[in-house]
Image 1 (cartoon, helix red, strand yellow):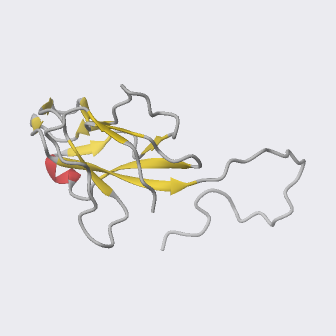
Image 2: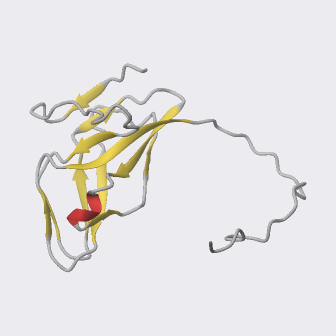
Length: 144
């Protein structure tokens, strides 16, 4: 387990926490009340700057219940690099309102989650031909 340095922009919020013993993701809440018009994009401040350990990134994802608000994460997932850790580098959550109604997300709503992921960087070695057999292209394993 890592001890992670974290800055809260509004200290009236508690530190993020894992809600269950088996939770992989830690929940993040909205720092402000945000209104997103139908079909539009909104950017939600999450009240945190985090010193992510070297050799890791944070995967920023929607909580499984976020869709119930009428919102979806605009880019699917977010990758927050370990060098995005300055004093003003607040995590933000970009969403799109997929409904025909204006959606208001109240301050303090748990809307996103972060997961620490260890990674390996690669160097590239270009080859003229790959040794493995071609499998048939994108989506080649079938529909079922």
